[in-house]
Amino acid sequence: MHSRKMTESSRSSAFSSDGRQPLVSVGMLAFNDQRYVALAIADILSQSFSDLELIISDDCSEDQTYSICRRFADEDRRVRLFRQQTRLGMQKNYEFVLNQASGKYFMWASSDDRWDQNFVSLLVSAMEEDSNLISVFSPFRFIDETGAPCAGRLGGVHTNRYSSKSAFLRLVHFCLFYSDAFFYGLHRKALVRDLQIPVWRGINADIPANNNYPVLAYLLARGEYRSVGEAPLFLKRVHLHSEPRHSNQFAGRPILAHFAFLVRKVNVFYESILAVRRGSQSLLFSMACVPLLLARCIYDCTVQTCYAVGQRLHSFVKN
Figure (spheres, rainbow, N blue to C red):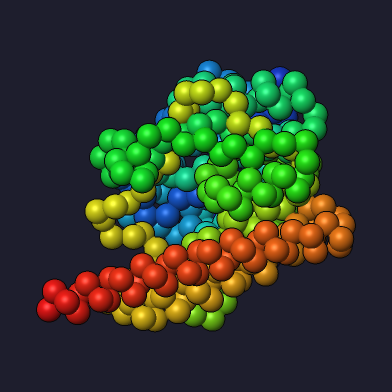
């Protein structure tokens, strides 16, 4: 049992009408997302694969998010709605919904993303066909606040091509083509239920960014991954023109924000090494991955530093 206070305000049963546990558990985090949460819930509940439960954890929303979730919980017995009495934060909320899951397979869901109705069905089929898979995902698109496809570097169809029989090659591909999108894929719960999602401290304590990368390093070290299909069945929303729902404490302080970024990237490197060690259960393998993950850390820090310096020079010249 968790020591943090929370209330479950829907049916407590995670079983289907015939007494079986659902095959798939979907854990959705909700926080001040009244604009999008109804669309996200409707997408999950209208999946062509219906043998699922939707676990929603509202993290003390201050708008109408909880009321919207409440209506869905009253109408569909597959919805289990929790309302946290004290803020957990994004990372602890990720762990909370995972710990509540009863299905053989599990997926995280954000309350502002969208899914094709065949998303779960396609991923479950791949999992059922290959017991070596720990994670499955589909190609995806980025969408903006209006639901329109993003342009530029975020435009087009994206695919996480990390598939390989070799755990080392999976991590090589991951470090070369860095993306945390497949965090929102389908995972084999028996192999992920004990994973740890890092929580940043100090200067990054209120910034829910980059915490997913060590989790993905763990998954790729632990088992095989596959991207299935060609169509983008998942739509990842990015907020390009609106205020972030979470902390923006460094707004207007670019130097401090850049320092926080560098510290965070070092934390990602350190936590990823630990995650690979836990996933592979091999000290030698984790040590072999140190150069890969260190190179990725140095690359990210260098690119971001060059960008920050360029922005400052541009601002200086302009003024």
